[in-house]
Image 1: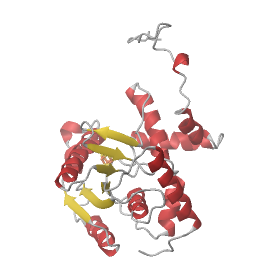
Image 2: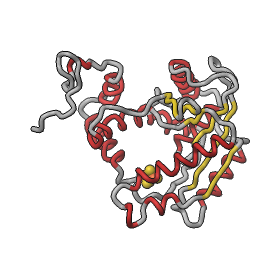
Image 3: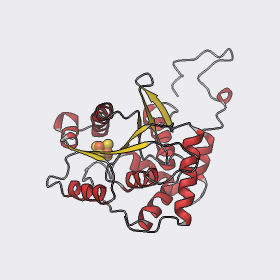
Length: 260
Ligand code: SF4
């Protein structure tokens, strides 16, 4: 891998990755961590950082897993990705699928992301199981967590987001997000510093998704209030349920809020 290792940015990202991992007790000695590698810069950055010496975290092993969604008919991105993983000495598994075209088929045009993520996730859990991985690391960063909060409010009628550490299948696996404290701009900057390749997955929905809409909305708001993303993130630690409607004074949930 090209690029210098101990740059100021690298040390900064490592500090915040380890802080998130310690705060949420994400990694334990002997954990086997499946890292979901989509080909996007974020997942390469996560893989890169997890494969460096840790200061505060115990020893764990890493397996990179790519589920190719089948958008790129010639699998050019697939070859490039494999080349990157091999060249940098990562242990990896790659699988070609037709999840992407299936999720965009005529009977499912309305919400391809739902089916796409569901099928991809199902296969990831199967591979984790087959390979003795108890942790599944995704490269969602701080901006993803903020955007998901808004997506769930705007479209899902609930206040929730991605958790930095989430137990699934009664604790058999944990989904972890070690980049939870790191802003997207720094992830991109690090990817540039390390000459990490950009591999497009070719998904026709990726540029028009709800996430892209929210991202643009936040970008626009940031022009007037540069702290808007940071404020939203911090607000998740200051939830005043007494000041949220939906419960009466006795604490009973009111399931049907009156319509306007
Ligand atoms: S944007 Fe494309 S690749 Fe991403 S979840 Fe949606 S359908 Fe799948």
